[in-house]
Length: 402
Image (cartoon, rainbow, N blue to C red):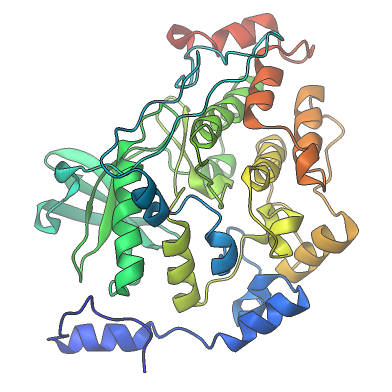
């Protein structure tokens, strides 16, 4: 028997019946044993021995997911309310926009905005309007294709699990609505979604240079200016997500989920949809993004904003070294090293002092001792690091110089 229903609709075709059989979830007993033994949760999957250079994340513990920004909870707490923009100067600033309010040392704690459910009738996309082109990637939800929609180049994420249980479907639709409202220069824009099987998909803006992961592996010059821009753009976008109350947690912050536009500005993708992603990955058996996971995540403890900060420290390391974290180690070796032996990526000798300080602060073992993204932006905006010249810092605070 399959733990997925076709949304109370009868499966009418052999394709649909075969699809449901193919996505039957694995037994849950191994997951419960792993939790009780405090073993990293991805280890139940036979895929962990296949060391991938850009693996996927595993999120399966509903007990902790309930603590996150789950759209079902938001809908119950904010029915019919408007969603205000984050308060504070610079809160909505993107690449080259205004600076964070606390830059320069005058720190004033701002009131966080309340997040409420949005009703957006224009969100629906008719799949027939999409001209699907070549596949450009794969992710936790399924395949990503370049496409055309009403004459505009877009990226389409076609969900691997088309038939969802009623509760997961409700959360998927609610979270998609919330994602569609978010507006920030460093957040990848969700343009719409098709919510009907067998073509459930997300339509997002298309960024021609692809992911930061891919850019770092291309034969292109990535100078200090670009490195600083990537770090600041990511921090600006994450600060925006965390500024909501409750915070929007990314839970999968890594270079493959950071997209680059034609001018090398960075936008964050694949955030939110925590329970939906967990449902997909439990059904498909995908393993975890252990190279970017904080120790408390590997230990199946509560996920907070500080786990995103840990992952950000690893992303900074990536931009400096252009390497995969813990290359040469299997996922199990890396995970157990981080969890039990305080293993971290090796900081290169020629690393600029500012970046070295940032990454080591972000990946300390204790979540409480890690900075917030607001603090990270203060450090980036007010740096006196000799390796970052005043001209460089002005370039990334002035939108006309980017």
